[in-house]
Amino acid sequence: MKGDTHITILTDPRYLEPATNDAYVRNILQEDRLLMDALSGRGLRVDRRSWDDRSVDWSRTEYILFRSTWDYFDRFPEFDSWLEEVRKATRMINPYPVIRWNLDKHYLEELCRKGVNVPPTRFILRGDGEPLARWVDRAGWDEVILKPVISGAARHTYRFTPAGAPAHEAIFRELIGKESMMIQEFQHRVPVKGEVAFMVMGGKYTHAVLKRAKAGDFRVQDDFGGIVSGYDPTPDEIAWAEEVVTLTGLGPVYARVDAIQDNRGLLAVSELELIEPELWFRINPEAADILADAIIREYF
Image (cartoon, rainbow, N blue to C red):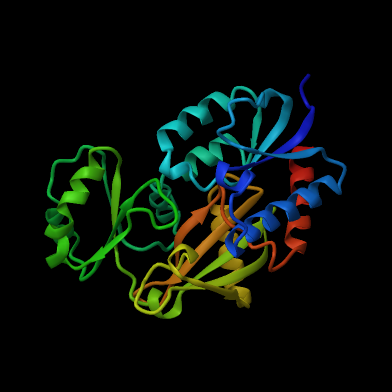
């Protein structure tokens, strides 16, 4: 019978029955619980499953909501096949076209065409035979970031100068044989000023955090020792973040706009997260209620 569950919150197997209970895991469980409580408190039937659980009959839930599915980029062929199967059985929040669009960082090209400032980027298609050094020389940047177009948590993210490109040729050849890659001009303000994540629920800003890399690193993720603190944005920054979400034309019910100061000192989108971003409900629990209300308006 369709609709045994209104919404299934998706996680990955590490966080369904975690073997450890450190602060990182507790944060994940708290984040998912805050949203589940907000949804169930509005009369919806909610459960929580691992996306790769083959015993689940996805047709028995009305919607699936991606939250802590943070292994998908490490298991992308499997995830991709699952995504195509499950879309036939149930519906997704955000919807399938939004998720498909946001999986591949080629979306940055579309945002750029719509006038959104993004770091200078070159995309390299899977199977490309040119040496990495040639790509880097053509770009003409003094420092480069290399990473896959489908990734998360700084997976296979490398920083180097043009002189360092040959040293990365072996890993580049290994990766480009399996997946498309991208190079970006390194943004020198990131290690100093960090990256701001703007949370947008139902098209409206709710809260923001500042992510800073540990000393000597450029990666702001807490996986690499990054530090998160609250952030009080200006009205102009809030309007900018909301406009970025609007310009997608996709109407996502939840979004995270990751922003940096670029090499010119201008606000730029580093990533737009519409699938499974950490949303830091623990910093602003009211945002979970705002998202739950937006979900009910949009889907119920």
